[in-house]
Length: 370
Image 1 (cartoon, helix red, strand yellow):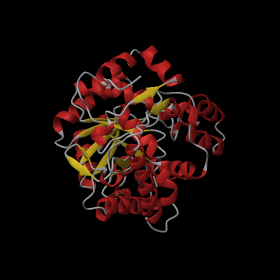
Image 2 (cartoon, helix red, strand yellow; image 1 turned 60 degrees about the horizontal axis):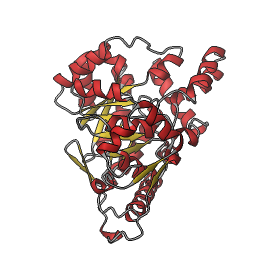
Image 3 (cartoon, helix red, strand yellow; image 1 turned 180 degrees about the vertical axis):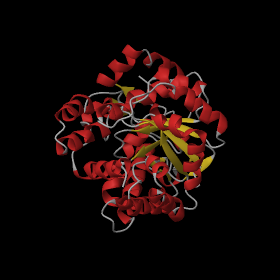
Image 4 (tube, helix red, strand yellow; image 1 turned 90 degrees about the horizontal axis):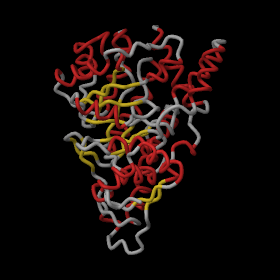
């Protein structure tokens, strides 16, 4: 078994069993308020959560974020997540497919997702550093492996910088992303994994042809913090120190990253990931400019119980009902209408946006913000 495969199962167990979530205060969702509409003038039962994304129709504006695969023990977890996606008509991403590129023995842990979810929107996943190593051929291989509808290129340099085995040569990644966008017929999503994407980076990604951006902001599961537990188990004092120093506080909060990426003068679909834990978080994210949301940890823990998909399905339905209530109380019948909901931003979130110069830009673009 290769180092990549072993690392995948270690990280998965840590995320399921240890404390790896950034404190709630850091994700800034508490600084966002949806203005209550006392006379919504709509029938809650007529609220439509269907969402169009990259030419595909999803029943809910919620996706199961990429999180696993690459080790035999992850196959059942991916099977359960895929069953939930197929049952509810939501999107799903697989974890990094680097392990499958390194060893055909790991392919089945990814392939099972398409086997179980033949009709779901599924995106493949590869890291930006691997683009230089495996090129267009490697990207085509991971797409073909799961008959993916899109390819996600993940940016996880924070985690890579802390891992003793991390790939920290970030030279030429933007050029590689551009090459993939030009060569691959499938939509290309670029996603962060917990440190967020700024306005400047989003602008560069749009310029090279990226189809969508997943902000992956600070505020949810910290893969960098997960490295603390790996380092501790291996007696790596420096790695444990770096995990503590960078794992909890480094990055752009999800709320801020949503606003920065959706503030571009040219529209690009935005996925909000990072601390999405309930339907109100989903509603706030869409009102701020996201097109849909994704989450990992809320679905990972019930999936790893290895019984069936019922608890994952129940969790997604619960989040969807919470979202419906929030939409009803803001007078929004559709997720597109939710983008026009009145929002108030206060505290740390507003302070960051004003210092970054995006608050006024968004205010001009979205009139119902204050």
